[in-house]
Image 1 (spheres, rainbow, N blue to C red):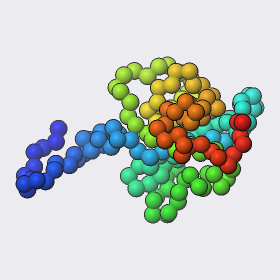
Image 2: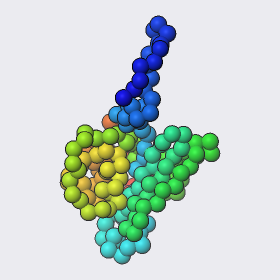
Image 3: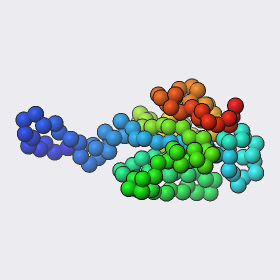
Image 4: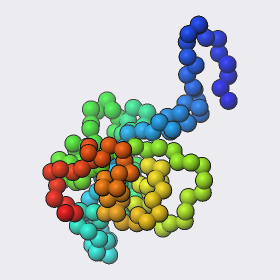
Amino acid sequence: MIAAAALSPGAAARPRGAAAVQARARRGVPAYVVFTDHTDLAWLRLLRPGFRHCFAVVQVDGAWVIVDPLSHWTTLRVVPELAGWQPEPWFRHLGLTVVAAEAVEPAPRLAPWRPYTCVEAVKRLLGLRLPGVFTPWQLYRALTVEGVVPNKEKNLDKGSEMGA
């Protein structure tokens, strides 16, 4: 609950604490989904080349957080914005496919049971409920071609022929 504060005439109340976090979640935070071919698991080589693994990069409180869900653990790396690092050009320079997205808090209802995979972790991080999406390629298609992300023109990887 936000305590009432004395405001000067015309001043708007700004949410603080938990209310501020909830307001930010409803607006969404900038994020990127990065797709890669690299995998140490032999069975993942059955998946489409260039789309064998995915991870997310989310902007949170003055930093970029790289969330990389692996089979044995999830790595978190924090890059302060002060470093001037921009994730989209960085990962594109490395030859990876990058899709701009937004992490938004979904409606508060029970999420479906799914195996813990990189795709499921990224979907949950972004607040997406895509029941038929299980592979990185399917997630890429949902985010770009099917228009799950509003600005899909920005998301098309024009320089890449992966997945064509």
